[in-house]
Length: 399
Figure 1 (cartoon, rainbow, N blue to C red):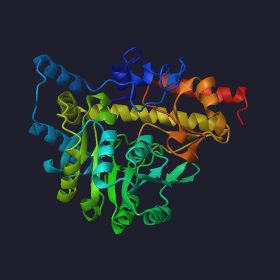
Figure 2 (figure 1 turned 180 degrees about the vertical axis):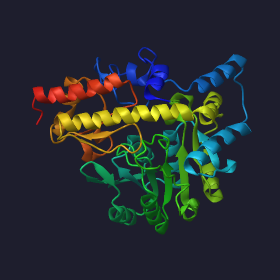
Figure 3 (figure 1 turned 180 degrees about the horizontal axis):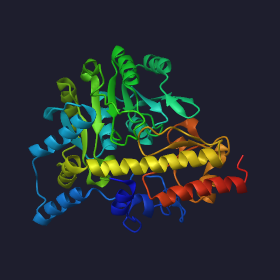
Figure 4 (figure 1 turned 30 degrees about the vertical axis):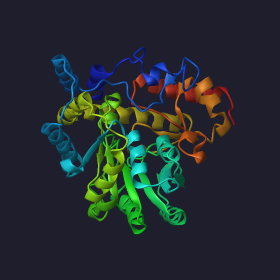
């Protein structure tokens, strides 16, 4: 599917639909109206037609009672994972949650005790921080190396942090949000080997696995060359929610290959979760995985076009701004520090440019002066973002 075909068919106006991204800016997060919303990680694109058709068919039946999981769901999900990422899954490995943030909270409780240390690679999605702190664990933040916008893992520091703090669990993110990295087989293996040698459980959040812009192939923790070495300490999280814009249908996967780890997880989760499966979430997911390849192809072309426009235009118009390479996700991380005083980023981007974004310090204390921008949107907002940023910097000195 071409960019033009995809946008003509699926681009949608979300204002006035109780959208968190569009309709809460003034009243909640930003406390001011009139901002272009480029923050929350969802999209201005409708789900594939086949997903909507499947939902309509189920809704028209009119009954939404207790439901058992059906075989064709696994067939659709497993085929998607095998074809695209060479992942071999088994039904007994799969648990479900209403979302991956909820899953993180459960897993922190299942595999650690209060006061235990949990390590994350910062800058990283802020619910990672919250899942550790809210559960009264000791948060260890191992900062990624930043080489002119290209982020990488500091393996020496990671091992040192794990040893010094007796870390029990690592939350890994691939593709990494917001650094944009799709980790290589070697990087994943080296990280996991450190965890194995020090008896650390690994939770690999792979929710953005399908949002790959083609610069580097995505390799799951379940398909790296040495995967068998780590299955006794590994949990992998996936969901159709980011790929197909289905977040509020509340259906995510918790993949636990090892039987003893499943037993440990179930022992905890059975005390806090007696929720039924999300019927409509599963109907939507099955249809998306079965029929959604062409839709995803159009989406990825759109995201890549939008990202490359921002990257190239900013490089030309304001070369001091550093846009990190976006290998995965639709959320480029942009370093404004050479042109904007970190203390004045809100004044610049929100008050003067009138754009709602995620601020760098939400992801790491060391990233004040960065912004994370959502490019899974109408191209007119991409153009407006670039124009406002570049023109405002010409009109006013923010240093």
